[in-house]
Structures are given as structure tokens and as C-alpha cells.
Image 1 (tube, rainbow, N blue to C red):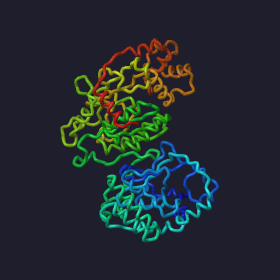
Image 2: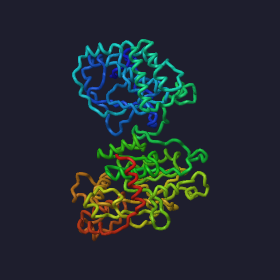
Image 3: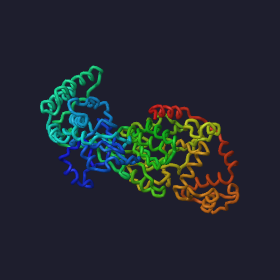
Image 4: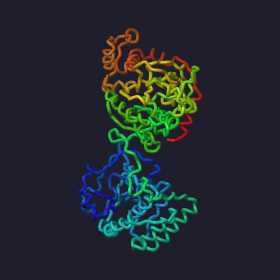
Length: 568
């Protein structure tokens, strides 16, 4: 298939191209390099009359709309037609909205796209295609009338592209350069004189309302990555998981001169259907460490989670990898990601959605302010005696501070945000979390990110919002047990009791009082929690909500600030 506006005399070459051999790099590019976003559409997309008259299934298109579907950036040495439907011109390409008025409607938006792309080459902007956001049920068309209206597309598009590719201007401002191109298009008989006048009025109007045109780049500079003679894409090729890229560049952790001055901490998160806690985790740590330092492996089926994570990936800049891998298979994936991002980090932690990174102040309290964490990380590159540089290698989180369930909060909303729950006292657990030193080769990151060996403690503190509302904890616990294949979603409560009791080698009778729950296996603590709930629900619930704690207002204020940062 081909879109309306594709040069029809080039179709044969296009069909002979082996798509499998096409050069497609998967990587990362900044939003600032995007000028126009064209979303494809399902159903009846915008094809030309030739396609519609020769293809019986021209109205039955279905593009991938899954969370794994990636945008496609068009390189700067190429042209691609985009139309005026489901199309967004970002601010730096706002000048490209003008539609020619001297050509038919079936031609105007296509030629506008080519004209705009020519100018965007001079300012380092690109066109990006995204997965579908609409389904198009097109009104009935007279295909022969469309064919007649598209005549210029068939007859002149190839010559137009040759003209645009060979055109250049010495104008120092973008508005002058745009106007010069419209004059050139008129002089070469592609557009009428009325378009020259209308384009001038359009540019004058933009100036009058205070629009700031982007600066023109010097294409004669061979070091310019956007110049015609060099690379055609603005990003570095990054590693991928199931075709989804994540950042591993730039490498710096062996270069003390050019690297960031503060220690760079990257977090790897594994999550599934944990809304709205997921949003709190992402917004908090994005504000704390930078969204680019978050690596999120998600297996959610909840569309609230997947939609938010696509926003976090495409707008905020987090590294999001959608995967349905079994929990028992994830150690190798976590390790591979850790090894590949180690060159652009100083320390790596694998955490869960209910774990929030802070810094312990050494006085029995948790310093959860941004300044506390940043102060701990600051001066890392310059100070040879920085406590983090003096670590002998892999270290561990110094303290864990657990949340306290609140029955009164849960009666109002079991999905209350973390700031609504009090905290217990910080505890030193030498086996809780490993702090992986990126200067040391990472041999394995285990599923929980736990510390398995004797390691030196850091000032890092984890606020662990594991216990909030019993309904949520039961839901999360059951999900983990199912993903570990310890139980099945189809199991009855009695079948679950039998399976888990066998793992502990206990009788199913009066387990709360007779089973020591001592046998170790993967997620044994979650199995014990779920069994106790099934065996003595009332007693267990009473004990669950019996504790008391205190609020950390510094942490709560920082959490609330992170929520307000982006209203999503």
C-alpha cells in the first residue's frame, strides 16, 4: 500500500524494496527534534484514487496500537507525505500550517507537507509517525473525481521533490527563507501567484502575534549532525527489549572530567497493574532523579497503567519496556539492563512500585526532601573522599522504613496515595536492597534487588509502602504468587491453601497457630501473608491495622509537589 501523495512513478521501486533489509535504527531522540507528528489511522486511511480503484480491501487497515508500538522518525535525507488529518504541528513548526490555495484540495495538504519538510531540514526538525489515535469511517467518494483532482500529485510530485531537494537559500532568518521558497515554487510553476501573497500575509501575521521563528542552522558546517552530508537521524542507537529502546548512553563513569558532577543513580522497576501507586512512584522519582534515569518493566493489563506509562515514556522521557515475561524469567532481563546502563550511571537499584528512595540522616529520621538526596549525590565527581566514592564496591541500602496501614484511610479509599499513610521507625536490614556500583561488573540483579552478601551500608533509605490497605496488599500478593506459578488464577481458596501449605510442609488446619512458616522459597513471605488471611481472616485483619506510626511531612510535601508537577 501507499499513502496519498507518494510519487506514483516510484511505486515499482518501492515494491521491490526488501523491507526486512531496510535500514531502521531503534533508538532515542529528543522531542525538540520533532516538528510534525502524523498519526496513522485504522479503518479507511488516506490513500489516493488509484489505490482505491485497484484494491478491494482499501478500507480495512489495522495498525498496531499496542503499548509496544513505537513512533517512526523520518530521516532528514528523505521526504514523506503527511496530510491534514490527525496531524500535529509543534511550536517550532507552527509556520508550516499554511495550506496552498492555488491547487486542488486533494493536492494542497500533501504539497504543504513536502514544502514544510524542506524548510525543517534547515532547522533540524523531523516528521514522526505514531501509532493510530483514530479510526476513520470515510464518507462516500467519487473515485474518478478524486483521480482528476489528484492529477498534479501523479504528474508533478517527483519533479517537485527534485526541485525542493536542490533548492537552497542564503536568507539569514527563517521567515525570509520560507518566503523565498514560496516565490521559487511560483516561479517554477508549482503554485499560483496568490499563494505567494497569502504566504507573505501568513508570515506577517505570525510576526504580529509574537511568534518566535526557530533559528536557521548552518548546513555548510560538516560537523552539524543535521547536514546533508552526515547522519540522517538525531539519535544514538540504544539497546532494546522486544523492539523497545532504552537509554544506555552517554558512557561516562570512567571519565571524571566530562561526566556529570553529581552521582547518577538509576532505578529499575518491575510493575504490573499497580494503579494509582505507579503514578506516585514515577512522578516522585522522576522529580528526584530525572525521568531519564527510570527503567520500568511493565506487564499491566490495566489501561490506566499502560496509558500513563506511554505518557511517561513519550512525554516525560522515562524508559518504559512493556513485557509479559514470566517472573521466573526476569532475572536475566534485569541483569542485562543493568549491565547495559552501567556505563551511564554510578549506582543502580532494583526497586518495587511500593519502594520510594530517600536518604537517611543518621539521627533515626528519614530525610525525604529532594535537597537531602541531591546533597548526598552532589560533588561525587570532584570529591575523591565522597562517601559514595569510598565504597569498596557493591553496597546496600542503609535503612528501610515501612508504612503503617490505616483502617480509617482505607475505609474512605483503598487506593489512597502514599502520603496518607504513617510510617514506622527506620530499620537496618542488611539483606534488604543492593546498591549496585556501576564501576563493578554486574553479574546478576535478582528479582527483588536484594542484598545477598555482606556489604557496606549507604545513607540511602527506602520508604516501603508495602502495607497500606489490606485489600490492595492481598490483590498484589495473589498476583505475584500467580506470576511465580505457585498458584493458578483458577484455584479456589481451598486449593490455594493446599498448594501453599505444601510449600511450607504444613497442615491446612489452623495454620495461623500451628504453621511456623519457616521454609524458604521464592516469595515465601507473600505466601505466608496470603495463607494467614485465608486461615484466620478476622484475627489477621485486626492485627494488620493495630499498629501506629508517624507522618514524615518533608516526604509528604515532596510527594505532593511531584503530583502537582504534571496533571496527568
